[in-house]
Length: 277
Image (cartoon, rainbow, N blue to C red; front, side, top):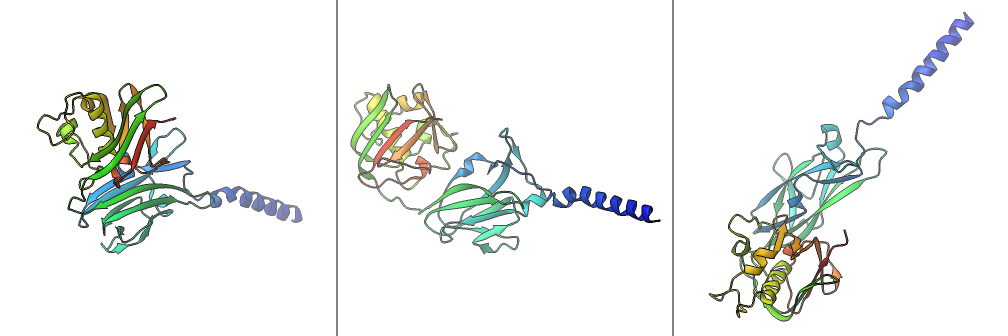
């Protein structure tokens, strides 16, 4: 009887030990990164405070493949805003809230003029939290005015595509350059941005038609339209001339936000250089 009881105890202990991993497994995938399902959502530019934006987060595995979060994994996702006077979130009851948890997809509600960072954090049990951010700019509905005294340089180690100083940069539609089908949703519409400065300086330096003003009847975008490629709704400079992948600095400081969403101040120094990655 004692032997049988001992065997039962050993069996029970072994079953208990085998069951530990099952209880410890929280059912959540460990991702090295998370990202936006739509890469265009890394930068969001809106005009006026009545607009909204639908944004979805996904897990990114070691092979950089996007994976939808499961309903269980959604519980460990939190969205926050750096400035609730600029952007908030709608909850399930269509109420505006400063943060929201338990959703992989949210609707952003634009609240006021300015810029804010939306941070999405995935923090499953027993794993380190990982985050991704979206830069949101809400413009007013009237033009802020041209930017004066602007310097622009775009260069690699071997090629200088433009080096211009004391420019007056105005806002213009990128449709005028790349055609009516070009998606420029993430480009400022009521302020001249760093991308406007770059495109203007490139055309000014490389197309010798004698025009200096984009409003001149004879101004054209021949050089830029043939030699520049933008991506992600105008927010990323993919190609200039024969050189691919560019990053930019504003007044000598590297900027993480898209050049298309960075409004110029008088006297700004805009520099584009070939990215190291």
